[in-house]
Length: 585
Image 1 (cartoon, rainbow, N blue to C red):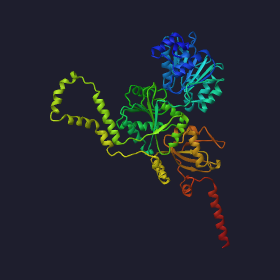
Image 2 (spheres, one colour; image 1 turned 90 degrees about the vertical axis):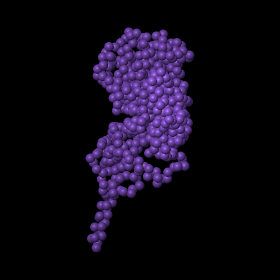
Image 3 (cartoon, rainbow, N blue to C red; image 1 turned 60 degrees about the vertical axis):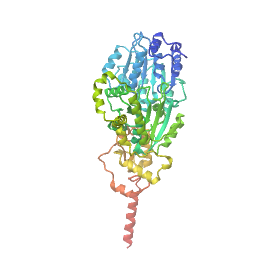
Image 4 (cartoon, helix red, strand yellow; image 1 turned 120 degrees about the vertical axis):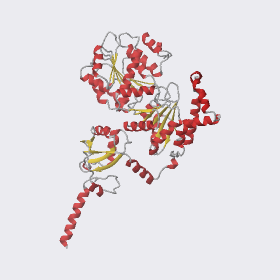
């Protein structure tokens, strides 16, 4: 298909698309648009981020809208308010020549009263986040009994973010006979489950093999010790003077910490995470789009809806929890025919994760060496020279000042003037990197078991922990290994630092790195263990049982607490034997 005219869309819609400079549909649009115009059955469409999915479902939704009816006919659900606003703005642009079409965005962080008034005035297309959409339904302000199409955009991300309950409640309010469209970058187990439970014999369209990395993206990894991760990030940024990229961190705390360090060290950077208000998020994103920020530090969830085509780098400061998320991240660079670089900064225990991503995504990583101080200084110096050479000079504007300037430099040679300017601009890098050490870790540098234990101890000693209580103990066959598994399964990750563990008979205590408890507690409280409902809470005022810890010290299981009640019974048995000996005497 060579043009949008061939899709069968109305002339007003094609004209709006042409105004945007688009002549030919992308592969996902070429497959999806004609199908949706001619078929009313359910559809699962798989395409990577940045392939034009919004137009693929949005243009047919506009085309099929009955303009005489003022009730919602199409409901589009997406995971974040940024993506919600982006979809709404795109649809309004596509429909600018379609008179009488109203599109309303409903999302948290904005006045619900304004959204209610907009719906009441009449809206044929609703774009919403699951939480706010459900809220409006429960308030009876959003009625979906005439909806003919439900579109789940970024469905995999909505499930990852825990919106399953909201999706079920919303879908229950829609008519039984409707068209359900599911758009996703990945075909995960959860997506399969949604298609089975909420769709009727859906057809599947895909423009490429699922989870394939972009061909024009180079994938690199740098291997360093965990303590040198930020130093590696700085050197990567410095060796690339024109870098314009996103740095992905796993948690909000990491995001804030890295962004603060970068700002303190003089980089144009800021953070994007869930603790920001909507106004703050909009400001950060606008500054980044305008290139007022060179580096944006973000979590995966916060970066949803941030659509920038000319990123040079995506940097994984922390590897994601799944191979599919890595594909999402790396797909943000190398767009629109341009090349891009996706970087992973890993420590010695994460190399297996690189191989897992390669296997799942069909990409190939290259190991790169963290640049030396000399290499960085050379790169920065040459970049400075190029920048000066390309500077436009308005001679008329500076002419009144040049006589004094020439007079001040009269006793210096041409070479000396250049040296002074270079030193003025460049001394910061020379001073910082003059004694820079090699922080690369190669396979031959693999530490011994004793050294690895020391590294773990040093790392944990620098990590602040929160102490939690759990209502399960040795009576329910809980042990440290099973508790760690329960924690990792609840977080859907094994990267959180776990400190001391104390297993008692009817309950237990454990430490988790500070900040993670906000995510962990509600997740664990939804689980059961050995048929018992789990209850986890903060236990700041409940001390460790020091006498028990001493008694169990040196056990190979790594716990500071007893694993069962046998120790007490053994002591009681020993006391009985000593009494019998005294009687015999």
